[in-house]
Image (cartoon, rainbow, N blue to C red; front, top):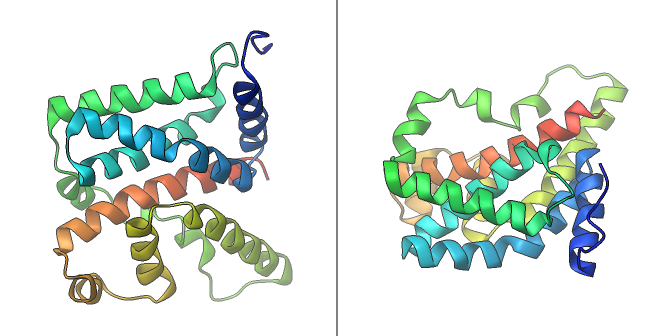
Amino acid sequence: MEINPNHSENALHDFKLVEAAKTGDQKAYAELLGRYRDTIYFMLLKMVKNKADADDLTIEAFGKAFKNIQQYSPQFAFSTWLFKIATNNCIDYLRKEKNIAIQFEQTGEEDMDPMTNLKSDILNPEEKLIRSQRNKQLKVIISKLKPRYRQLVELRYYQELTYEEISEKLDLPIGTIKARLFRARDLLYNVMKNTQDNI
């Protein structure tokens, strides 16, 4: 499908990043996240008037966009497509007012966990190399997350703290920690799944 010739220079750069992301390039995902995270956040903040909810919905919007990246049409600017996803997702959230912590309890943690695929007791040299590459790729995406999400992911998966230990360390309710990790994991899962599909 041909790209719209009227796109701006920014939109053309986004198109190149999206094409790279479709092949599983984590740096392209990370750059797209970095380019639009704050803009999406402030747009959602105006809609929900709550910083924590706007933060959560920003991560969720990127998770949905990256999950459906193959459906993106270059007839439209990526930013337009992303803003539409974020807006529709926010409207759904406001309409349903669902508690994500309850949703977390209904979803198998292992099913949504991108780290699960990296764990194995017996690995051959090729598998060790793949796991090492995936760990590096994950760190690229994690580094682009807002500090509140990055800290939780690092405490949970790199320091291997329990929910209770994280709750005590950050002085946050366990439900809040689970909800934030759920959203961060959803984003990471979608990025890693797209990469896996292209190997």
